[in-house]
Length: 170
Image 1: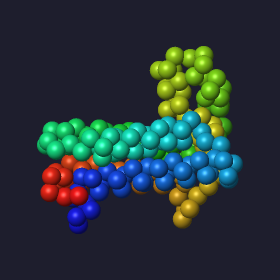
Image 2: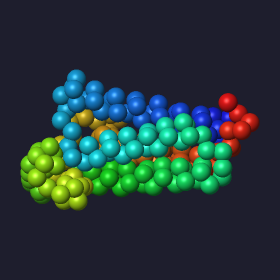
Image 3: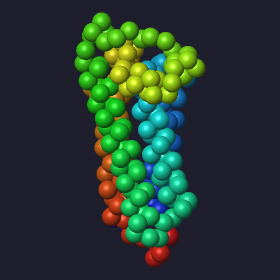
Image 4: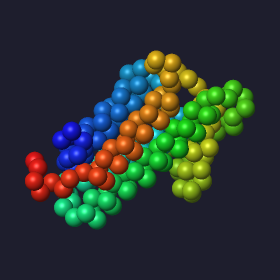
């Protein structure tokens, strides 16, 4: 129970989970040659953001009630964004590719020619490439697993909110 109530332990566990997930994502991309769609990239960005929030919290080691709550709130809101993106991605995968807008331009090209807000909108809307189910485990696709992951991050954020200050531990 100490692990689930200790600020530093929670943050370290979150950083390790984030690094592991990003490592797995790059393994799927580089070794298994599974090309990530725009929504997969957005989910990676959210995992990175949560990992960075946890790392900053770990390094900063807030001793005040307010500092801890700010970091927990940021992590919780980021987790909710990840849940929303993953649910949308799972929903898109339920449709046939012909019912989803075409793939459009590659992400790198969109970043070069479009304003950031339009690129973000295009990434969140999903494309036909987002319907591809190229991997599943135990009957769940990657976006389905990411819903579970982001829910776990949300639980970690709630535990971080309730965690003890580190004055007496570690």
